Every structure is written in structure tokens, then in C-alpha cells.
Image (cartoon, rainbow, N blue to C red; front, side, top):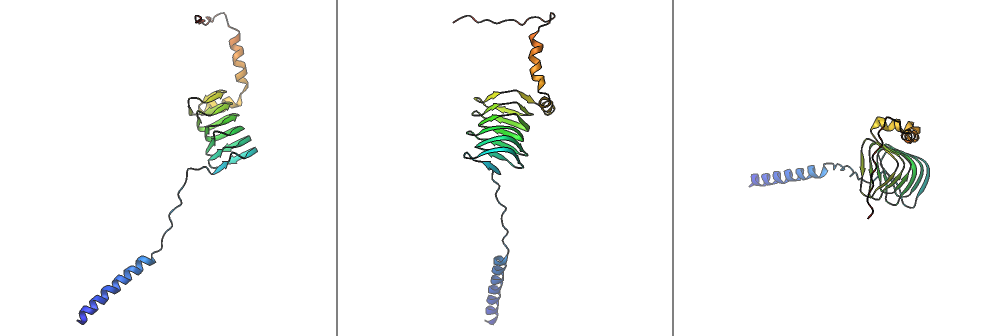
Length: 178
């Protein structure tokens, strides 16, 4: 009987030691969940004028006038109005932008987007309904050269205006009245 009591006591002690071990194990904190929300945001009630430089994603829903340089993505929301040159890794336009856009990776014009200015990027997405007044230069080297020589744009029509005698005139197309 004494041996039986001793064995039962040993089992209870082992259980108690195991519980203490479980309870005293330090709990490690889980890493914070990273959201897809932009790090910097200009809300619809905000108006900014000047130079803006940011290292993370920037979302603009208000008004911005000046210059924007961003290491990551610039998102111009549907109701936003931006009068600025934009340089970023990627640019998504849902609102209105007046100014040139230079993107290292991609420009996306959403269906509600409107741009008045030149785009320079290696990749572009234009949704149906988007509006663009300007030119698009696709390719990194061409984009940099195009922005350094804006005079090339004005001299091109003058070359075509005076046809040389060796050129064959372009055919004219007429449509019958309805």
C-alpha cells in the first residue's frame, strides 16, 4: 500500500511539473499583420501645395499642386485633383492629373481617370473610359530622352507640312452621305 501511495504521489508530482512547464513557457508575440493600406494618405478634405517626397505608397484623394516623388506606388483616387509632375515606381490614376508622369514600372489609367500630360513608362494599362491628352513613351531609355527634348514634339509637324516631290500623296478617303 505504501508503494501504491508513493507511485500515485509521483504521478501527481510529474503532472504538476508538466503543468508548470507549460504555464511558464514565454509566449512570443505574433508579428503585426501588414495591411495593403498606403503609408501616406491625403484625404479628400486636404489640399497641399509644394514638393512631396515619400518612400512608401502614397494615396491622394484630395488636391495636390507641385511635384511628387515616390519610391513606391502613387494612387490618385477617383475624386482627387493633382496638378504636378509625378515620379514613382508605379502610378494608378482614378482621378484627374495635369502634369507629366514618369513611372519606373507601370502606369494604370482606371476608367474614371483623366490625364493631361505625357506618360513615360515601360508598362501601361488603360481601362476603357479613361481619358488621356498627351503622349505615351514606352521604354526606359526612350522615356528619359523624350523628357529632355520637348522641342522634338513641335518640329515633327513642320516636317510633314511641306511634302517633297519624291513622296506619293496619301490616298484620301471619303464616305458617302447618309
